[in-house]
Image (cartoon, rainbow, N blue to C red):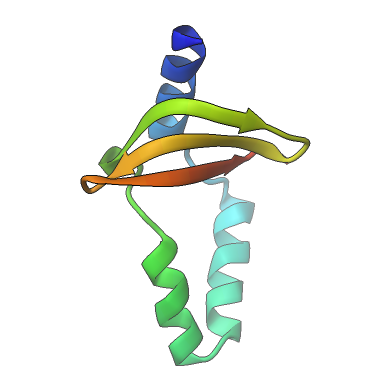
Length: 81
C-alpha cells in the first residue's frame, strides 16, 4: 500500500499535460463566462502543494486519495480515463 501511495505521489508531481489537453482546456476556458472562468481557475492547483496521505478507493475512472492541500485534508480524485 505504501509503495502504491509513493508511486501515485510521483505520478501527480510529474503529470504534464499534452498539447491536445492544453488546447481543450484553453478552449473550454474561452467558451465560458468570466464568472465561470474564475470558478474554474480556483480548482486548478500546483501539484507540488498536494501531499497524498492514503488511498481511499479505486474505480473505473480513477482513484480517490485522502490528501493534504495547504494544510487542509481533502479528497483528491485522479482521473485515469
